[in-house]
Image 1 (cartoon, rainbow, N blue to C red):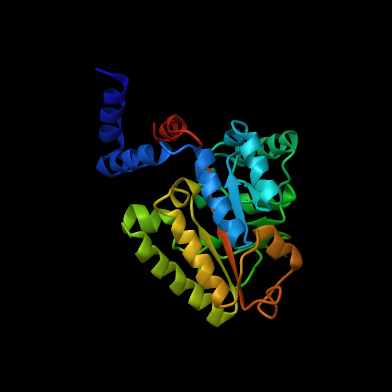
Image 2: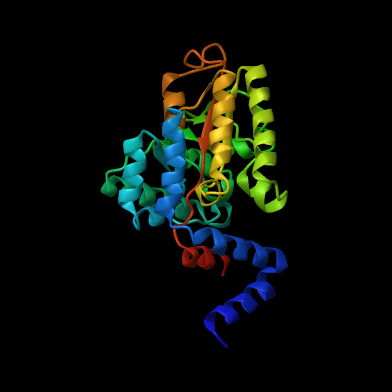
Length: 283
C-alpha cells in the first residue's frame, strides 16, 4: 500500500468523509505555488491602490521570508497568527504565551514589523486577550468573530474585569472564503454578490467591515477576480481599503474613514505554504 493511499484511508477513518473531501480540495489548491498565489493578490491590490493584511503562522514564515518581505514592500502587512497553528483554548496559558513570544521573536529575526494578532482558528479563551495586551499588540483581528461581535460596525475594545484592555478589536464578517467556497459552494459570481451586499451594509452604517479570505483560495486564478470586482465596487461606493494597522493608527471612526464613506479591511490567514504541512495539522 502506498503512503498516499494509507494516508487517505487514515483520513477517512479518523476524520470522516467531509474532512477527506476538504483535504482533496486543499491538495488541488496547493498545486499552485504560493509565490503565484501572492502575486495574483498583490497585482489586484496594486491596481486599486489597496492593501491586504496577511496573519501568518510564524513557523511558516521562516520557509519563505523573501515572499513576506515582498508583501511588506508592496505596502501590505503581516500579522502574527501564532507560531504553530494550534487552538489556544486547548493549551495552557503558559503555552499560549510561549507560542506568542516565539512568533514575535521569529518575526523580529526576519526583520518583519508586527503590530497585529489573530489567533489560529479565530479561537480564544479567557486568557488570550490579556496576553495580547501584555505582548504589545496594537490590534486583534479574531476576537471580532465571536457571535456577539460580528454585527458591530466600528472598532471596539475588550473589557476584562473592571478594565478596558489597550488593543483595538475589529468585527470580523462571517463571509469567509471557507464558508463561501467550502460550505456553500458559491461560484465566483455568487461570492461577489454576497460580498458586495455586505459592502452596501458597511456603507449604510458608515462603519468598518473585515473579511477573512485565505490566500490559498482567494489567490487562485479562478477566484482572484472576486477581489478585483469587490474592490471596484467598493471604490465606486466610497470605500477605503487600507491595511488593518493603517486604519487603526489613523484612529478612524464612523465620523471620518480617512475621507471615505466606510472602511473595508481585506485579511487572509496564511496557515501553511505546502500541502504536506496542511496534512500534519489534520493528522
